[in-house]
Length: 392
Length: 98
Image (cartoon, rainbow over all chains, first blue to last red; front, side, top):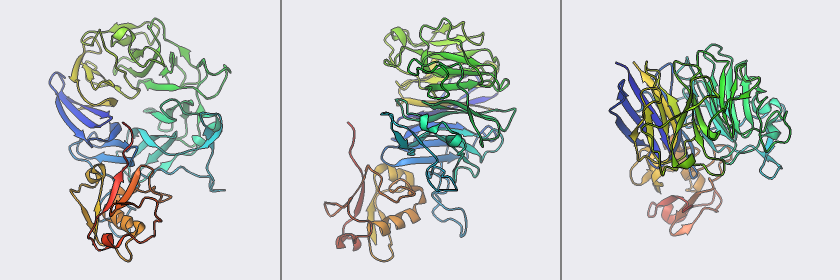
């Protein structure tokens, strides 16, 4: 029977939750790295025991952790005390240095600061780690201030893919309330050259040549704060989701609005339909039904809480527009937690499991595609991210 | 032999308990002590000083002999009691927030 491993990043450590395919009884391992902010933990599709984790701190900066045994033990790549003579430079796994143009050695670009002035890029943390679909040693990192980095040596060292920041609109990018973060990285399983990323608050971007060149893909998005309806960038995209069998169909939780694109992001249209509010952060797609989409509506951008104190996941089986509330097993009174953008995931068992974590420290699971929910754990630190691995 | 006390988070990261004892070549300064510390525990690189600028991270402070040495030049000699191992060199995560 298959097993599932849920990787949870929280404000105060990481947790690994494991169960068999029934998903009724759970073992909880953690906290790993207690006291540190664990922004994201994700496993390699090419080697499920290879995990990468982003460990951060306002005091001590960024750390990258790596596990080769499914999260039982961890190491900081390059942190070995006695490196081989002439070997890889040690202690580089947390070194994220923005590229500079080879001609001048000067910063590639500046971005727009809160007051409208131009501001230099300043590395703060890694929000999202996306391991390669085929190589356990290749992993992408989405960072704040927004940029995309890649490691091809198991996170020993990182290089920026500068074509993203350098493609021309960088000076118009600006931080959202949570900082100017590159929070979403989606690799196209049918085309190694195609990657989608999203940045708050710049928008979504796509490369078709493995990250050398990028184009904004924000046509059709609307923002009440941007007077220009044809603005190329400036959108507070909260999250993108894609089903691997249809990599040109994308779903988006925009700041407000749930959106859909059927042409790899070239054009978007709204599919909020009958949602009670279309503000939110998390969005994901059923593992076996590409038209079944999940969101967690949140009241508003000024009140990051569920409507009416009811925690409800909404599911559309029609690719948007028609949504049903999923409530069985979820608190339907006095609930005022948030569900952050990287805190929802699905497993790929026959009966698709859906998982999400809350800022109140609960991780909820549904083993039947959202019909019924139960908490795996109730009292973790605030959950920042949830990923799931389906193991043989 | 120089004694260094790390904050709890960095002890966890470096997998050490209690004080760290370092042999430092040449004069004991902030730079030479941190160089020796990072050479022995490479996972600490970037957590105390910026990788590129080598400047102290904003919320890190250095204390020894009941003095705040955070703003002393990196190459200034540390107090004799630190150099002799009588007193530890303390790396502190600044108290911030509520």
